[in-house]
Length: 330
Image (cartoon, rainbow, N blue to C red):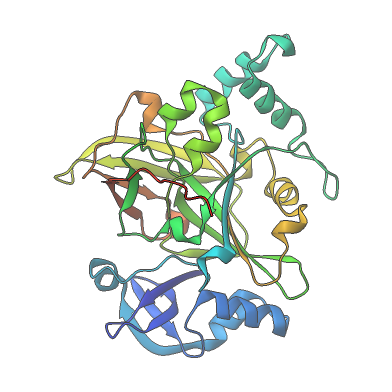
């Protein structure tokens, strides 16, 4: 099941089922958030409640997308109550990448870089037995709900950034219930988007490089994630022509951690179990255009798609001028 949030032509928010190019509107719920909260309180699955509430009114998905009325598949009315976070060094990549990576992490541990040590830890202990605690992954904070762009909206890069590059990833979407427990609604395709040039100066700049916008959606995949997900990441020039394209791989078959292990190490913190909050958590990637020496220019676009998630996520890169912020003493 795929769920889409959108606006009707009159501006009214709705949520619906995406079925063969049409969005079948739900009758009782204007947002995915309200639908999920109702499912939690009624002790029903999200799919069960959504299917039961689907009405007869439909909307053409292409028309909604073309008119800029798509929304992210999950949000919170108060953006400060939505956390956007992620994990890195979690993916094995293609067969060639896996072979190369295993050669890099073999031998003397002390001779490895900190990043390779972290990756090796994941390979050795990121997939514990059910119920056991695995090794914790690299973790980072990106921002709150205000940084998340829907498909069709621009990804805005600050002018002090040294780079703005895509990271094609799958994100887990969660709501914290009234009981303080996290509930996973499902998954969405995403462009985690980072400043790789800043990060490469020194790995301690990772935190700075991640404080950027991201793209999410357009559809929420309800239920379990396929064990193997294959998608395509593209860079389109200003005329819409493909100038870079590469497959990416995700799902647990292509990861050094289980989803459950990544979730455990995120939600073990009490801060992240505040009732009513939304969490968007990126699971990582092994495919980056910057690795092929591609520099994305303002006006060019990112396109990320995987068949399991329905339509592609598309965002154009823009640069915004920032002013020096002066702190005033009181």
